[in-house]
Length: 179
Image (cartoon, rainbow, N blue to C red; front, top):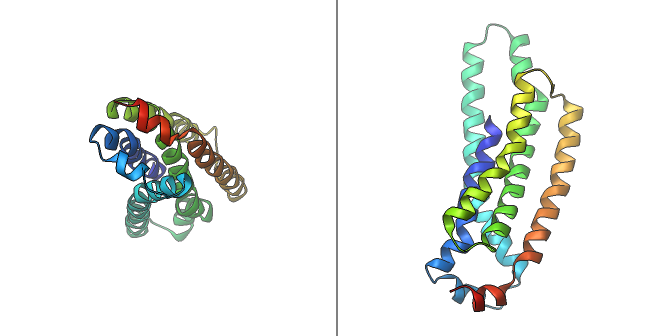
């Protein structure tokens, strides 16, 4: 459940980042600057992901402390706060957030309404919910090897999603056709 924070929070912020600025007429001066598109989008992504990742890690720390105080044995604690869980929260969360943000920026650069961008971004949560429900029903058991493979795949997907966002983002089209 902690993985929903770095997907939902920055996704909403990033979805608003392009289309919201366009509607407020604050995007045109930014697009006219000589900064490369990838740097502009990376800055928008970092501005959205850093607060969400910090919040996720803080929530995970509070959860870990609470579980530590309420658990009966150290062995039971090792099943809840495992190395796989820690790796997933520390590395998987930011990677999921990066994917969410890159796709949200891509969506936001193509639509003309902030609410539409946020609703389309909400669809990105479905694969993560499938993982959560799969784990709840015992269909998916997270172990360290699976988490490492998932983090590697997420890193590749995050890089690809940012590349796609840069390719889809067309400064001239946004400046000339959005009115």
